[in-house]
Every structure is written in C-alpha cells, then in structure tokens.
Length: 215
Length: 139
Image (cartoon, rainbow over all chains, first blue to last red):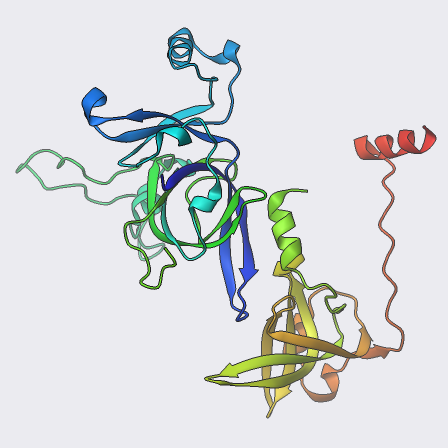
C-alpha cells in the first residue's frame, strides 16, 4: 500500500541543509484506514477500499449504514478506493502511517481545485481579450468570433466559452516528499497541491522514482 | 498550536537578529562557490521587512560604485551567518522607499543612539476578547 488520503493544512517554506529555501505543502493524515480488499475474483478489479475520518451514525444514510454493518465498520467521512494497490490481510483495519513514504520519494497528488464560480473566457481559457482603445467599445473581455458562417452553420463542439471554473479533480504529477513526521502523521510535499486548506487530497506514490531512491 | 505554525517555528533560528527599519547593518552571507565556501559581508540600510515567522526577510540597500543595490535576505536562512547592527536611525515609516530617490547627503537618516523600545501592545478595551480577559482577571 503506497497511497493515502490526507488533509491539506497549508503551505509554508523550509530550509534544506544546504540553505536552499523550499516551498512545501503540509499534509496531515488524521485517520485513514484500509478496510476492504477488492479482488479480481469477487469484484473484477484490484483495489483497496480506504475509510477516512469519522461520521456519526445519525448522519449516515440507511444504505451506507447497511454497508458498514455488513462489513462491521465504523461510519467514515469518506470511503474511497485506491486501484492497483497491494495490502496484506492483517494490515486491514489498521490506520495508515505516513512512514509508507520516505524523504525523497516522488508522489502524485490528486485533489479538488478551488471553485472559481462562473468565469469569462479570459480567466477560464486564457483568451487575449480585445484592445482597450483604437475605437473599441462595449467588448473588452469577450471571446470574439466563435465560429464560421453558413458553413458549417453551427458552433463546433467543445468550443471554449465562459462558464464554471474550478472545483474539478486535478492530478498533479511528480512532487517530491521533503519531510515525513510520524509523530504528527504529517508529510511535507514540495510545491503546491490542488484545493483549499482543509481539503482532502489523495497522495499516491508515483511510478517514476529517482534513481538514487533509498527504496 | 496549528501544525503549520509548529513547522515554521522549528525552522526559525533560535536567536534571530533583532533588526529594525532604518538600521545600518552588516549581513554576513555564506556563499558556496563550487567546493569553496566564503563569507561575504554586505553593509547597508534596512529599508524593508516583510513576512513573519521563518519567512521573514529584510531588504538591505547600499550604494555600490555609485549604483544603488538592494539585496533581500531571508533572516532565518542558514546562509545568513549573522547580522551585525551598526546603528539605529529615527524613521517614521515602515518602508523607506523614499531613499531610492535620494543621493549622497540627502540620503542620510538621523541616527538615534539607543534602540527604540518595543511599543507595548495596545490593550483591548472593547470586544469579546477584552471581555474574556477582564472576567479572567476578576475571576
């Protein structure tokens, strides 16, 4: 098992031994328990079901209560699966520790980005907008032309337009683990991670590891 | 304490240099060139401080060969060996950007011999926190 769920606490910076300043995101793993194995024989695929956090029984709906009762589990805030992870049977039910990562490991982080609301094409798609002067009026941040004339007589599918921006699943590849604190169950990851502070992120060990990795 | 604050505190120097705006300082900077390591000293006026905890930086301005040079030092960086304070000055603002426009004699600051004492933090007289403090005292 080389994956876990954690809470993004915020960003800061740390100094390396050399004196370099490294921007880091602090991720805390509060209670992240692998509870169930999905196997090819029973489910058709390999995965580990992970329960994160706690939820009161009265806040859990009947369907989920049935699931928790069937597997004799405590209701969790989030239930999620990590595909293609291996885990020993006796590790099920025990909270994951951050020491499954080591300093220098390369990880991928998946989270939900901050929602930006309904945004125009300049912010959402990086359009250039229109000149502020030279006879231009009324249209400064608009998209401009969105297609051709009688042929094809319609706007092509997938054309970038204004709309809801953010609040989508974002996958960030190849971030380095800068520090691991087993006492507080936190890890420091170099660089930024999707989502707001307090949001949940998935941290998965990347396929690509540095050559001089200690593992 | 919040965990991010705890990490920042751990990253801070035990005895960070106490620098004020307008101070003339000598910053001893450790510079690594290939294998060799040497200390470079930069002397100038602190015109700007920003950031808090381990992210705090100072901007030191000096005139080098007739050209104004500003360098930013993260004061908690291990590369900043030490900061000597040569003199304090009387200043009335937090950012001394006006020094950039001035040259020669005009660009001097009025020196004060003693370090200005830390202002006492204002005692809150209104609001929830103040009320809590009052009841704590009384009780």
